[in-house]
Image 1 (cartoon, rainbow over the protein chains, first blue to last red):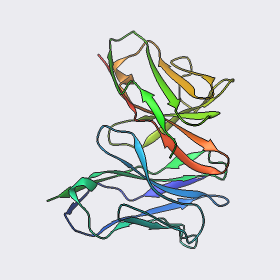
Image 2: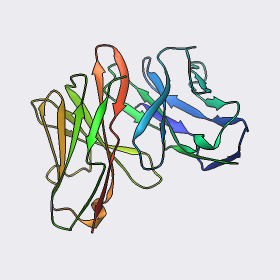
Image 3: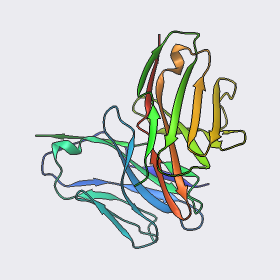
Image 4: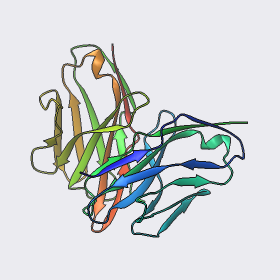
Length: 112
Length: 116
């Protein structure tokens, strides 16, 4: 079945460091891929998405490219800020959009 | 984007009582909504799929008599935790999508349930 494998955390970085959170997936057909962010005590917010191969999703300095050949959707940011501290979830949805599969989440802490 | 509102955001209840959590799609109709449970420092676990006008579909291992789901309208689904126990304490999140080719899921703010 479909699944998402996400880099385990926690990850601790200094401010302005480069961030990569790895995500790979297994799916039949052509899923859509997402990164969601969860700030402490809150629900999930969509950070970015990509709906087809080679698409690049970007938002707030974060980027991820849908790589079908490597079945990956790694999250990157060139210079993290303290306010980026949160838990990041990689997810995919099937073609209907009704079934979501989430990675285990990666906790990021950015220190000044 | 579409907005999903979940209420309450926090609730504390006594063991043995029931708690109702509401999930509303504010600016779109959602024939399907999803209920998740999140344990501390863990990912989301899909509990059930809520279908408007019909019975919910529960994931394996989720007690349907304990977690009652009602999807009475196209904009409202409710999750009732019956006879709550401390082990039911958790973060519950609902989501919905707009359908019609939009594959993004929109999440509620979540409800922190504490059973004492």
